[in-house]
Image (tube, rainbow, N blue to C red; front, top):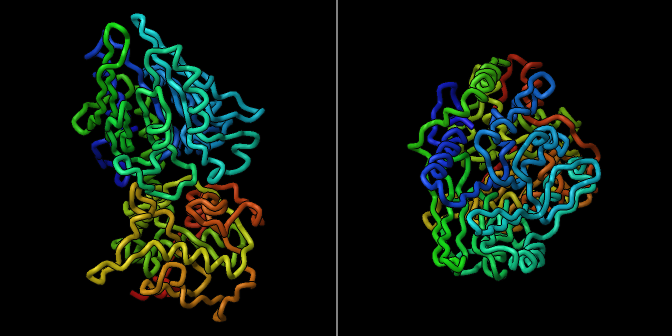
Length: 504
């Protein structure tokens, strides 16, 4: 919402919805006679301390009800559900959107029996005799990440298969057809070569190249910056955090045929704050800042992360703390966690809630699973594939973890075991030593391992973890577990861990 990443109270960054919404307002004002559709393309309700506070304080504060008031001011024409919309449960979505005016479109989702969120598969807009159809689509991969209870009874179909059936039905009824897709591209837009495993998480390239009759494709999910015309389809992806507003312009002739297509990204860096929204969010922001600045513990020496690659190759006291919290919460033998991105700072000596929320940035909960020693080694091998040895001998990041979307959160550091990663060895053969309590871990040994629920159901290409191996599901977000642990241990010192040996 605000132009800040909340690293400091007075932090300012050149992005945010207050800027993006103002830029949308300016575009509308500059083109009063044109049909302009604002697609809110998902992942709006989660992703910052601002939104997390609304959820955590929902029983004491009504801030979550203001989302509809915000939308009333900015007036999106349609909403698309992002995968992160499900993190707080469909019931929360119902509460947030109960007074919303714009339609929620999801053609490839059949919602469960106990909620009513989705308004339909598509919407036809008409102005000056021109009809524009918008089909809403959401990545089908949500069941691979989300808590089962959050999507109980829900069905997610392939967006490509859905669009393949629906586009021919809708095309004769409209002059312009738009696919609004919370998902990204699985292949290079120029060469068609796969840029990731073809799991179905992203199907944008198929939508772009294999479905006739589409004029525009709005995408998201991957946080990439894309504005291109491929064939006869204009397509965009605006990055994230409101750093850009993506605009697709389609010009029609007198016969209502599209004669030109343009795709652009407009940076919000120099855009002013939307003054019409401020009265709805100022007190909310003040409460968030007060909440974030609460001091909860003192850590001797602090746990700041100065070198993220070093933390991944040799472990770090902050990662050890997170794993310790996780093991204590669910009684595990072993715990794994990730540095989600290279903006994670770790913890200061005087730890505030801001420190924790900026370091553990996702609303993950935990899963305790019983796995074999062979599974443990496979998980470590997957993480070890994060590294490559560069031509100059330095340690680099495997491009599959960085392009087209940074996936640093798919490398895990583990506590409770001693292990060696040798990146001179081939992928799949890099774990050259693996011990538990000083003894070699055998393939048929059993371990109780705690990881976050995304990893616990195999997310990030970790098929050795799965829901059918779960012994226990945590109900409390990890960030809240960390805060509670620090409050219970207000004077804390954790040494640099030595259980990971890295050979390069």
